[in-house]
Length: 283
Image (cartoon, rainbow, N blue to C red; front, side, top):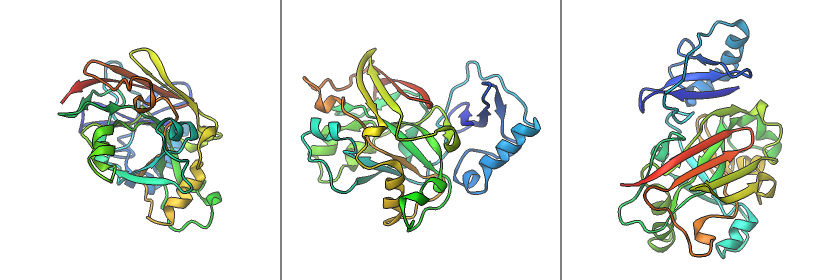
């Protein structure tokens, strides 16, 4: 299934898209797609309602697509998780996952405009596979237990301001948590739809020019390992998001460092998860 939210910011309606492409309203089952919905078996309830045929359809033409998850509890990010990306930035391949946090309020819809911060000269893009937690993960015994804790997957653009991130502080937070810096979506694709999260192509283009073309098989630390690893240091709860890293091709590592400017358009896609598209404007 593909779960999503449509409508104006702050007033989104939860929906599900079935395998035939029809869209159904979920308001009879839940007020929103959030941590409480996932923790209470919401995905199973939606699946049962689809089989029963009890959900009303909705015409989504002309409606905004919001982030598929409302109010993530936390957004946990993994840096330098592809060897080619580490190389292009001049960083050593990490022996342990590089972990940082991103303000959950940065999450916006997949087609919303993204704000280039005031004073920014190095706003950058990062296409990433995002993992959505559906069941509490606390001190998992092994990566083999991780799959049962994953509700599904979606696309994340881990937008970054490199000067803020790398030059203004020893921490990365300043360059990662600017307003609108985490477009998410379009859909939360349930984990049963993704046979192997380590076999997904990721692509990103800026103004129609391909900049990133990678594959999750090239992750240094795979999805199951990341969920297990993080559970040793924090409790992952339903509705949390993990951004799992980006392949090579970011502006920071390209000749001439072609950072984003007002009017630039970025388009992202991941196999089986759909496509995002954002226009960048000055804040």
